[in-house]
Image (cartoon, rainbow, N blue to C red; front, side, top):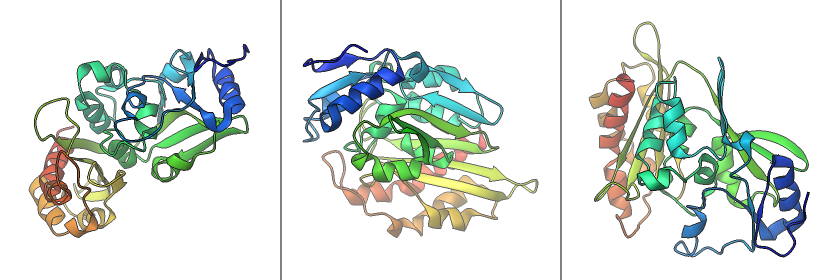
Length: 285
């Protein structure tokens, strides 16, 4: 591998080259793909890395592999490509809806799955909630080897990952979930969502909820599941109005973050309406 030397950007041609370059720079280095999150770091009050390893041209990281029991999405797959290749693929309706409504068309053509997950400074990322609902795993690689961890765990540790660690893929198990996603904007398309709700439900032959996952994004610093509401909905018929009514009784599970787009209390108060919309979308998926 050609040494990156003193340049600020090294374009890797393979995962092995990327890992070697990241290991060489240690805490100074970071991966670079679409760049949409990196360009916002000064706005978020966060420092940019001294050195970037470009991974966007690595074929392995740009591939989507749909198998019978799982779907593997490379970390450099853009939102636009995710929508184009996974539309109509079970159980990805909620994920496709989230990716297809994120930001603006120009951003969706650049922003990557891996970058969206790694942007711990950005509370309004659209992909973590549906990935939480799908029990997705994140594939991590370093010079020490390969590891797969649950998205929930990844969101908790992403800020403190070991230098030289690279997100290479997201793995989604294919289960018979009905999925839906809903988001609220204050003004127009392209804004960050005030709140998002994703839902994935598995219904029994009697039509009642056997298993359900509900995840909320943009309300707090990081997306997370809503376990109390999930428990309330198990064993019931999945009905959008009822789901919203139950959500109203469980709002104390969240403490909304204040922002220039909306106060924290408002983010929490809109959740029942978003639960209703997500449930309705899932029922029509």
